[in-house]
Image 1: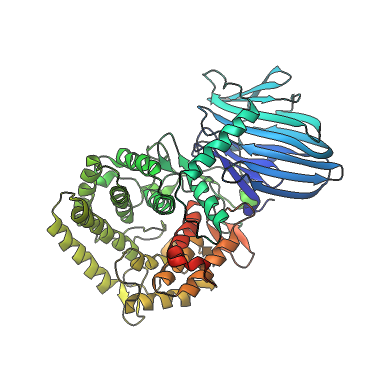
Image 2 (image 1 turned 60 degrees about the vertical axis):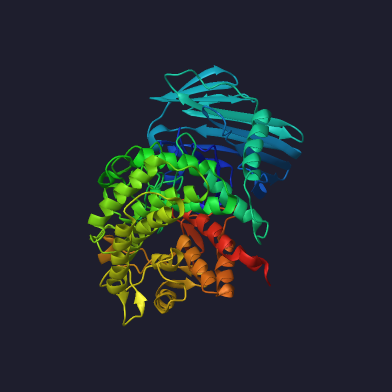
Length: 597
């Protein structure tokens, strides 16, 4: 079984495929990130769908990398008789969804086998294969149609598509798979080399338009993080996906398997701030701002915790019993029960986006601020209620300190928008509510005996999201209460240098069996940011280097890390984790701190 970190991602800003270091696409949802998968071996077996290209003889060595500044993946295989390269990519400019795989001979002569086994509806349904000619096959099931074209001979056997050939130095064999609706015409042919050049230009041009700080110690990793977040945007609508997978486990063999192929306003706001602050890109912000207005329009009480990528409500959470799960981690889930939760922090995340857009110089959007004012009216009535919080626990609702903090931030951003940009509103009343929330958090969320803020009111545990207290400006970073909270977090949540848990595992809080001690990478990044704010630069650098050391061979991160088994865990790649890299880089880049000896 491939480890989670053995995968790389290619994408077209509509969906993404995960490719193992053995040259096998084991995960692909079509036509969008949140659609059903047609290659689902990642969560089951090869019978649930895959697409493999590999030598037909023993592999001596494998290496892989992205072409510089792109999402084009090169995998090189060395065998006894030669060396070959597979170049995988998805053209972003296409009106369809295309995957192109080019096999190139580098040395000697290598026998190669291509095997494609599409299985629709998450690996459950076998499609119809129709051979158009020796180099084109049409594959149909329900609303889905795949057209596969190759420069080698294709054959259909036992509901699979196969091709065998030998590749010699200087030769190329290409495969093009195109998705289209089955009631529509087949996707058009493309010229693989031209598509490769256009895809290279797309990614390189976008990255060149970014204003990147050249003071980085790990520029390649930071560029990869930025490109990954860009690839996780859903360009037709402007939304951002939290991860491209579902049900990759937080704990191997257990039930903490969630579907992250949706857009959380909170996650997306964090991603957008990271990308904006590191690149200065405005197009993504404008698209995201308009998506938010469309998706959240109407009554604030009807706002969803998460959305499908087109802005519609997500489906109910169901399980897929025919998939045995990644390393038998069941159940495999589709949909996310969190959409029925009350999470008061999400309103602050939405308003933050509107405020950031103004700070970037984007023109005021009346609908956005009308919506923000309505949200504050709603929060004024709701902020004292318990909720399920940022970590979407499935236990009882609590008065989570972070939720109250983000309500405070919602009022604070609107007040700042008024003072800085003249956004209209009852500012004196907003200041009164902001002050009431501040006092309430300091009174009920701070434990004097522990000298620390706590996870929720009347709790004696800490939560890593308390690190946002100084990051959001609620209190200064060297306030004694903040210093005490950091000490408590270090004492209770630190696993090894630079890596911390989200919170202490408690079944009575989470509502499901505790998951043990796993490092949550976003929170580890927050710790480094707070160290930087407090002037603990050497400690911040240690966190920075630790996070940088965890990326896989192509610069990608999952959601969590197990310091015992030394494995990445959770959905992959995870936006939160790449946000952590970028934000900590920014925190340390001031005054050249990253490159200091």
